[in-house]
Image (cartoon, rainbow, N blue to C red; front, side, top):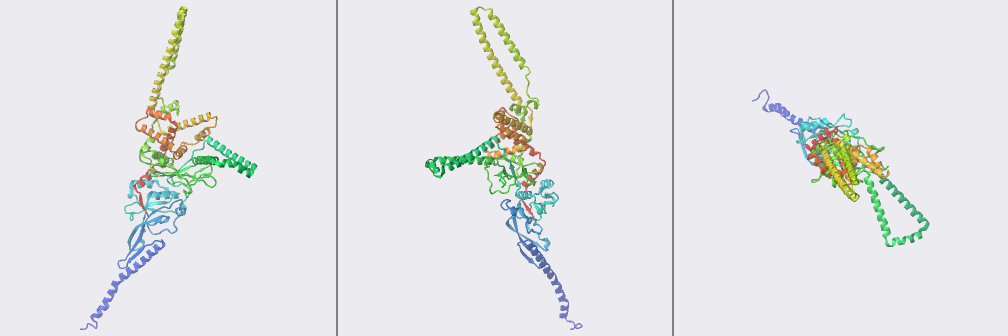
Amino acid sequence: MADNGRSATDIITYIGVPLAVLGVLPIMYNTFVTLVNASKIKRMLRHSRLTALTRSDVVNRIIEIELPRYAVTPWDRFQHRQEYWSLSRNPSSIPGGSWTTFNWKTNAIGFKTQRVEYADQLRQPQVDISFDELISYLLDLGAVPDPHGWRLLRSTGLWTPVGCALMKSPDGHHNALTLAPLDDSDGNLSLCVTWRPEWTIRSFSDLPPYWVSLPAPPPEPKDLKKEAEEKEEEENKKKAAAEAENKTGGASSTISSRPVTANGKGAQASSQRSSFESATRQSKAHDATPITCQISVDGIITALTEEKRRNGGIARNNTMGGASSANSTVGGTSFPLTSTINLDSLYIEHIRVRTGTSDGVWFASAATAYGTSSQTILWNYRIPEDILTFARRETVPCGVLVLLGAADESETPEWATQHPFDHSHSHNRFVQRMNEQRMAQQAEMRLPQHQREAAKRERMQRESLQRLDDMREQQQRDQERREQREMEALHSAKWDTKLVAEHAMRWLLKQKQECRDVDGGLGDGDAAQKLAATDLKEVAGHVLHRMVRDSAFSTKLCRMLDRWKGWADLGGMKKADLQALRSDMETFVYASLLMALIKDSTSAVDGTLSVDLQECMRMWRKVRLG
C-alpha cells in the first residue's frame, strides 16, 4: 500500500540518517577537543622539558598524564658553585613547578597520575624538600625572613592563609617564599617560591647560614718578639753558612762535612730540631688563624681554619645568620670563605654535644649567642631553656667579687659588718700593757739587787706570754672576722651576669697590666691595652676560638660553668664555690664573658623571630615545594 509515493524505507532514510549524524557529532566534538588539549599539554610539557606519559580517552574527553615526583636538595655551595648560585635556564611555567626556578639535585621517588579535561588543569607535582635546607638556601641567596609570616605559621599551622609570605626579597618589597594551596600536599606544608636574578646579592665569598666565624685572639708581644728573634737567628745562620762555604770551597766543605755525616747523628739531630721548630711555628700560625664553625640543631658539626687569600689576607665574613649581605672588613681587607676543599678540619670531639657531658651544649649555646644579633640570626641551634634561665638570673653575690678583687666595696651596696672600735681596743690594750710594764719596772727598782734580776726575768717572761696570748687572740679574732666577712659576702646582694662580666673583665685587665709591670714592659701590657679596646663580645669570640683549639682549656671552662650553674640551681654559693673561684679566677672571668654573651642574645631584637623559626623547623621537617 502506497502513501503518496513514500515508503518506509524513505521515511527511515529521511529521518533516521540525520538523527544518526546528530548522535555522532558529540563524539566527534569530544575527539577534536581532546586532541587539541592533548596537543597543548604535550607542548607545555615539551616547553618545560618534562618527560611524561600521556594517554587520551577521546570518548570521555579525559587526558591522563603521568609525571615523575622528585625529592630535591640544593647543590653543594662550594663544589658545584655554578649550579648553586645561578637560576635554571628552563623554568617550568606549569602551575606547581615554581621549584624549577632553581637548580637542584633531584631524586625520583615515584609517579603522580593526573586526569584532566583541559590544558589549564595540568599541575606539575610538588617536590619534597627538607624545610631547613630550603630556608638555608634562600637565606644564603639573600632572602630576608618575614617575622609576621613566621609568627602566623607557628600559631595557626596548616590554617595559615594561602599567599602568606615567609621570606621576602632582599629589598623587602616582594615575596620570595609563600604558602601554596594544599591540593597536592597530602597533609604536608605546601610552599611556593619566586626568585629573580637581581635578588641574589650574596655569593660564595659570604659566610654560609648556620656558620659562625670565631676571631683569633691577638698575638702576645712575647710571641712576636720571640718569632722575630728566631727569624733573625735563622737568617744569620744561613748567611754564616754561605760565607763559610764561599771561603772554604767545595773540597774543604766536603772534607769538613765527613765527620758529621759519618755517624749521621749530627745531621739527624739538626733535621729533628728544624722539624720541631717548623711544627711549632705552624701551630702558632694556626692559633692566630680565625675559625669558622658550622652549628646545626645537634650542635657543632664542623670547624675549619679560614683560608688565606693570595694577597695574604685571611678569608672571613661576619654574616653569621645569612640574613645580611654586608661583608665585614678588618683593616680594609674583605674576608670571604671561598671553599672547604683546602681548609684544615679541626678536632672538635671535645665540644660535640653528647650525653653524659655538658661541654658540647655550653659551646653550641655560646657560639649560637655569638652569632645572634639584631641584624643576623643563627637560629639553627636552640639554646636549652635552663641555660637561658640561668643566664637571666642574678647569681653572683657582689661581696664575693669584692673578696676576689674584681670589685671595690664602694661600688656595692652595704653588705659587711663594720668594726669601728677595733683600733681603739688595740690602743687601749697597748696603753694598759705599757702601764703594767712601767709599774713593774718601778717595783723592781725598789727591790734588792739579787731579787731585782729575778723579778726582771719573771716580768720579761710574763710579757712574752702576754704578747703571745695577744697575738693568738688577734689571730683568732681576725679569723672570725674573715669567716664572718665571707659568710656575709656569700649572702650579699646578687648581681646580674652582664655586670659580673664587666667587673671580671676589669680584673683581667688589671692582672695583665701587673704582668707588664713585673716584666719591665715586656709582658702582656700591650695585649691588655688591645683587650681594653675591644668589647666583651669580641673577647668572648676569642674565648670560643681557644675552646676549639685547646681541649684542656675547654674542659676546665665548662667545669667552671657547671659549678656556677650548680650553685645557681641550688640556691646560692657555698664556701667551696668561693675557694674554687679563688683558685682559678681567670677561668671564671672567661665563663662570665660567655654567660653575658648568652644573656645578651635573649634580648636581641630578632630573638622572637629566631624562636618562631626554630619552632616551625621542629614542626615540619619535610615540606612540599611547588
